[in-house]
Image (cartoon, rainbow over all chains, first blue to last red):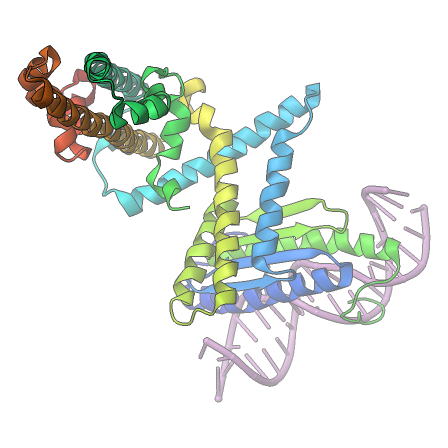
Length: 214
Length: 214
DNA sequence: CCCACTATATATAAATT
DNA sequence: TAATTTATATATAGTGG
């Protein structure tokens, strides 16, 4: 900008960088305010300095803008299904993927220390990843099967108990409280045990620790 | 700025306003990019035009920055918390979460293996792998917890049945077949439900060959 | 960290095409 | 409607407090 064009790359000198940050940050926020006022637009700017200090401008309030941003993104995804929108979808997905990768990179530092898989080749790591995927499916299937068996056993036993109890009741001419409640709740409790394992993906993502926080 | 200072107020002429919006919007986004690159800062800009079109810049990914913003705001809030700022926090959190959901759902398919992962670096693949690993654990824990709860319910019900039946037996002076078999098998079948449910999955998983590799 | 100065690069309002 | 030009306002790197 002055006395020598700047290069569009990180300023290496720390002091210069800090000064430039201060000036340009103010400039950016000023421009943002001008844009919002002059052109009647909704503008939000978020800036984090290297040391984590927050600077912001928001013409309509940050939550409102963030909310609108979310709704806009959602709309784009739902959008029509012409031939062209497929390309857009691809682009969106690619962008999302990059975003997701950033998330993973970020959460790595937070949640895990560095382990030493970095010596593996890309292909090897890909193999590991897909293997883990298959493992997940196998494990889930196996576990589901095991638990389902247990539950089936319990159900069978309970049926026996109920039948026997029914016989007792017949003899005694009374109806037990337990029998009544069981009839009410049986359906709800055991509907899960028979489901398939094909929806691994959804559950997997939902299970992400970072994701849970929100 | 040119040929007459601008006033910091809405441009009334519609055409002029739109032209100004286009130019200033580009300028703002450029400045934002420059700030992020030159000063190594995390910068996000969201602009909605009057007609609702979205323009954005985000140096580190919009969800990440929104997430960081939310967490930062939350931190600040710890000091004084009036009822209004709490509501705003809720909204912020919701918006942040929703955006994150959007991005995660969009990228779900790709991450879970339908695209070739070979274009990613070793580190990135490592992230994905360990994320899957941790996700696996979470999913497993959740499932185990769910099933354990079911089993615990069943056990509780069965105890009730048995007690009631015992009372019947007392009256009738007989011992039922079901009661006998239950006494034999109770230990084996139901040992899971008594102790902590979180360990069920781990034991299961460690026993599987696929998991050992990681 | 912020302020002030200055020389220059950039941004942009308005006119033109 | 959008690109190009022009003239001027603004932003800002470098410098010194």
